[in-house]
Image 1 (cartoon, rainbow, N blue to C red):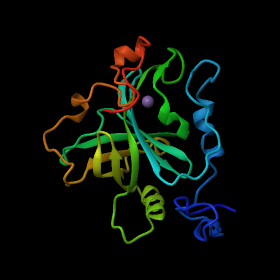
Image 2 (spheres, rainbow, N blue to C red; image 1 turned 45 degrees about the vertical axis):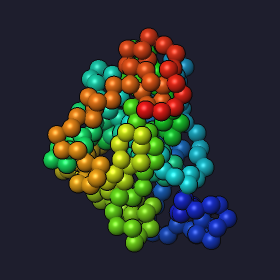
Image 3 (cartoon, protein in one colour; image 1 turned 45 degrees about the horizontal axis):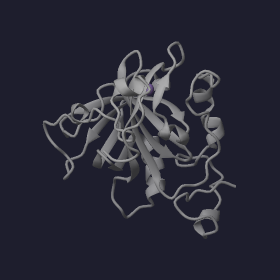
Image 4 (tube, rainbow, N blue to C red; image 1 turned 90 degrees about the vertical axis):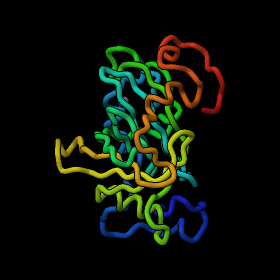
Length: 235
Ligand code: MN
């Protein structure tokens, strides 16, 4: 029996509803099998990245962006959905300018524990290089509020029209990820676009503006050097 209303507390009427018998967009596969590709790519005896375990239902959906100096510098956008972090590699990072569309290549689902990972993946390992926690917070469905937000998120993701409202330390407001038809279907390409709202800033460069960890205040060089955190919280 699958819980389909993860935003509600266990024991509430909605949480004990069973999933529909017919498979359709919006039902949730178990997170254990969804992390198979993530685990297969990594040697957990060599990297400090988390293996990921079973997760309880969370009342808020997590959002994180990690800056990752791998063979090519990029930003990893991760959005919690059904017990895993849906993940996109965004080469140029997010833009607050609604006129700017940023390429976002979908990558394998990551464990929710990955949201706390900051450090260095050993060279020669998958994704070898420095990882910074660049932004974090929660997110919700970014479309109209007369629908079940979790069902709308699942449907939006499945349709390739993923409307989100970010509540991070650095990024806020309404965004959309739009799946394009181009590219390898196993590595789907999306566009990350800021909607026009109060958090939009035409002409700005938010990636240039924030050069330190949202979690520890460290620069990429300081993380790579293993320097101690400047502070535990804050921008
Ligand atoms: Mn990455």
